[in-house]
Image 1: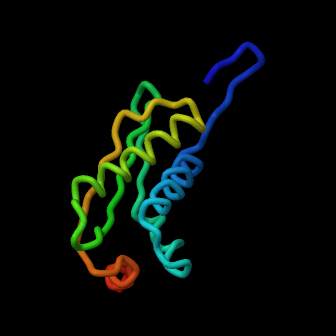
Image 2: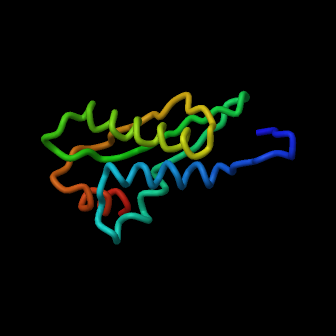
Length: 111
């Protein structure tokens, strides 16, 4: 982003951290499982410097998978746009499994 006084560059790692924190707000994993979830998020930049976020997750059994995915999409998109003023063109959520407890499934995916 260019300004009269200079420029501001926001790294992909910062965008990933914002997406990650937004993601865990919805997921509510156990403390010990939180750091492992960061690898499930990828950031891509378009030529126009817009942001695309990819998230892989499991979903809790019994909830609407569509609503669960939409909550993740909305939270990540709103937080990145609010904090960075970058345009988020897409948040793509891949639900890889449905489980009784999210923290149990994340451990199994790690192994």
